Image (cartoon, rainbow, N blue to C red; front, side, top):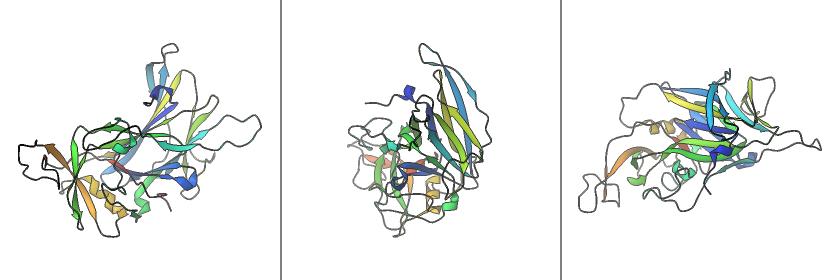
Length: 301
């Protein structure tokens, strides 16, 4: 079944160069680290969207002021209404939206399937767990206790992987999505709380800066987090290479992306990816993409 975003209390969109993993040891908590460099600045907007009480369609929106510090980590936590017995309620964790058949190169699959977000530890790239060398460059790291993760803004273009360092062949990939989406559905009487947290002590702390988003019948919320790229780098390649300022493959491999155009079976490609003579490599894309780490447990330890 397709996702029904109208049921979400909060929708989250994370755009720009970032790495994400799901921490199974912490109740399937999602962790998203924004890569810091001189050209990128993290931005955070929170909108309250008013809904028509009968049709449930949006009729207006307004920004919610906040003083959250994006030089510190950020916890997005679901707080439940008090249980009748007074006992604690534990987060349900995050999950990824995966639906029916999926093929990146042939453009088969649901447009919001989370697999459109490239997995740097999957077979399309390194096929192994990577070492995180510089955790301090993943700032802020966003911790999400609940929600359904999915892909946003799947590309119209197809891409190929090519080697920057180490011995690896060019490989046709296909379409990618570079924006991470998440829907959180809150119970009546509950709320979503955004708060700054100290790394190593990920918990809601009432003494820290926080924003509370209560569940309301005729409103919902949109949280937009963007690692804004202020200017393009004039060096060869794309910002995909910035991942290797944080990640290390033990064999020394590093990759970048290039566009790929279809030539057809009757036209010889001038520069074809390995095994795909029906495609030819084109120039470098300019977009900053998010990526996932399918084998990494946490970004912070």
